[in-house]
Length: 379
Image (spheres, one colour):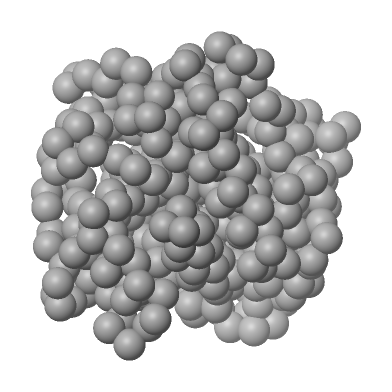
């Protein structure tokens, strides 16, 4: 029997092949460039049509978030459109932490990933299609370290200034699937949620804040190993031009409501993180976050409030992060939306788990919740 072949030299690919014997492979995740972060994987396997494949990713006790592996199931696709989950097990005592993925491909090619990838080609298609929609203006805010454009889609005739940003952490592809769902809603002239928001708001949508890391198959950093969501207090042209150009545009427009979209490795839930620990926080400002969270919790069973991050003590917020810095800088309502790599603990869907389709549906629920939030503040 000939060996399977494993490739990862493509957009967002990440894996190192340590050993292949027949249909079994021993693999390792490559670290982000100039960084110790390692968690994202994306590769393809050929040569195993109709035969079981066993893939062992080792050394995961030293990954960025080892708590993300227990209970996790890998994503697999044979057409790169529909992503399912496949049999996966984690053994922390084997080879310093081993994730074993088993799958039997129907054809001669199968793709495996930490979450369904969102390619740069799809990103450019998303931006171009949205920019061609009625009433949408494309603004090139600046460029990444490696010269890729940071694009913002601006639309709406209202006075409330709403910013939606995603994929500061490039391996959190859930964020750009969410952005695709949001832009489909906002650019559909027949969608009542999109219509209501365009009437009430001026919207600024940045679908991908970190294109360099996206191309490189990074989990969390840009091309020079910088975690962009720790740059918002003092971004620089050298290390974080992506954040600098976005924040500069925010300074020009102002911000009334901001949502920064992410994925979480360990927590099997969708949840929000806020800004409880920022300086000079008022009860009214905090109520903006709490009210929105309550509305979203009521609107969709895919959202919950039991699981999430610990709240910062008064005056103890990390001000280098987007949500805290924006809430403080603009005295506005801001939040981080987190989606899982795992399935939801309290509302699972075994075949796909948390999926691109659910990311997109959640986006519309988030926008519908924003309509309701705005209506309650007008009363």
